[in-house]
Length: 526
Image 1 (cartoon, rainbow, N blue to C red):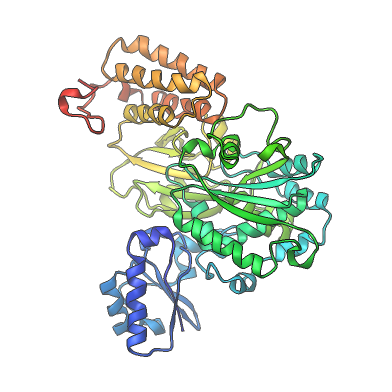
Image 2: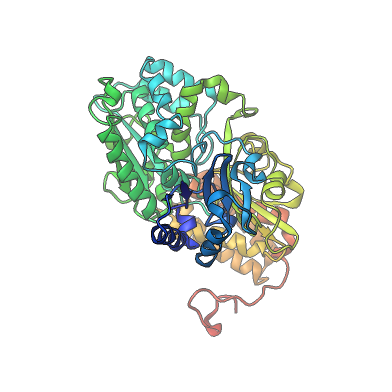
């Protein structure tokens, strides 16, 4: 009998380890014929720790389970799927999950993350098997035809990057996975790395075979120690089983992967800064051109994709481009991994075809605000995403639809705010965030963000408000057009959207505010 308790970082944060230990202790003391398996999270974070029991009818879910509740579950007969007030029924029938279209996350929360046998039993390595029978150009064409786009920023077509690297002659090529998931309210990359690491390894291997690269690197943010350890072990297991190394799956084609821990800076999420960090340098932006696909890591042609893009390649190769293309809308094909966070009742991961509206994501899945107060603003795409008011909630989650509203889908993170939020203060946060995280390479970002904080402070303090609003608008235009990368170039999005949609917050008297570590006497708001 199998009992599943997530080892995902989100579940650990709310006590999954003690719950697993309590269950194992009871099994041992009563000599039960059962075992505890530490799986990944299903992404239903409001139910974590979510304990599942395998029964002939399917897995039965119980959650959220505490250490004390674990003992009650045994007494109620949960090993046989018996009723309990924490019972959620069949896991697959929970509406939050049942209404999703899980392609990239098909195995996450189901398999034992570090069991390669379990991965293969759930259709793992089928994409690689097919890729090894194809010509490199045919693999690239399959990815291009699927419509797969990057899931880390502007949604650049993955196939174009792969084709460029394939067609660029070089004695060495690389595949780099950008796992520096630094956007607020995002955790999809972490869930894959902790819950289904072999799908990322398989995707990178497919990319390597497709473009002629023999070496891959996974750049994991320093704040993800669990993902880092899981990936290192998964790579060792893949090597031991012949899926990495001098002859991948006996094909005679070489590809291997190394995982590196990041430098702990938001700017490392930008691909050229990430490459600088990988090379052991200070993480600063490289001017483009040349593009990384032509002159990337160690000045060699390099595919740089984020975790979700690479982890999606296996299902495209397994089932074909047409299968994946049938999901989505317009130029946004396939599925988007939506991550609900902030003031939302049911925070968690939702994988759904592009085209779902913001309103549907927040209310049909998220259940509205956790506070029960009216929703006032939503930020999509991380700290550089625009703030959308309630009137724009019917915007479909689609790259072009969001661009038309001067927003960005980005990594799919959605942060919800109720009517207590102060958007002037949020605009200030965006500028301050940019000032702190800037690599310092270009003046518009380095100096513009610092001046931006000062200008917003004067607006809130009602010092020449009209004049300073015009100045802020000019400053945002400069940063938008003159910054070397998206950090400075996108910081105006949250600032200008806050002014456009919530102008009243920039004209009301500011409440007392104390910067961290400041006393009332030294507060910059005095």
